Length: 368
Image (cartoon, rainbow, N blue to C red; front, top):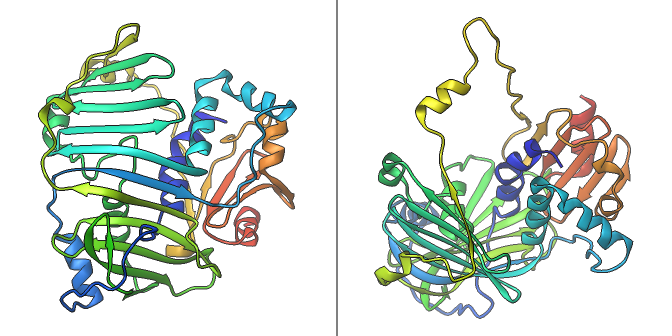
């Protein structure tokens, strides 16, 4: 899989998959709260000013993806995909979109954050304090240290920044800032998530041309902080993807949580960010023409949006891998990775079409 596809997958596929939410499995639904309209709850989320908290996030997905074998030829093919860092990233992305995952997250202001992703018998950590950033993988016994520019430290917002884990707040703010008349906004029954009383904000597509049935966002009634977000596929009741706090405290975490020292035996890599002069040096010299960067082509609107990535995004050799054969189905025009919430069409010339739409809509976009 090319780096181009990997660069666009988080921006295109993941937000589509996690565009909706569900309440925690043990949520209580007999909560009495002040009466509000849907618009008032949307405004409550917009006024969210929580900048210090700690809690445990539970991510769960049932997208209908085939279960990958752990032994046999196909498993060997999967291993062969790990030959490059790009393939390893693709395998990691696939793993994150299946099953259940747990992460512990601590935040204190815009420049202090710690995220601990709990893997089987292992742990991955992101620790940031000001300009100091550490990425640690206990299974590989490796750590990467990055010194961020002061401007990045000053203007970053950890509540809405990109990190190892996507929080309900990040998803909810992204969804609610892009509301259009294509969406019906309503309220479900009041509930309680992670011990906090909440409004249930429901987003429902007005079109039948999408795989998405509804979105549910649990909003803390006291401060507007989103507590859970996940998505239900059209025609189903159980959520296909959800991320929710199972416990949450608004107290500022202990300061020592934002300091990190690599354990003994850890291989440490110092990664420097490019300086301004280095970036200028890499720019095309006078009289030369830079190769244009092909941007995704977007067709359709709102819930029926289809994103097209350019030819060559997927290498022809990748389409022949046994592993991909298990993940895809042959259709007219290429092969399809089909889930309950999003479809991906891979064409023979390496183009990729992605959308929360039926396969026929992707084929029509490819033919057009």
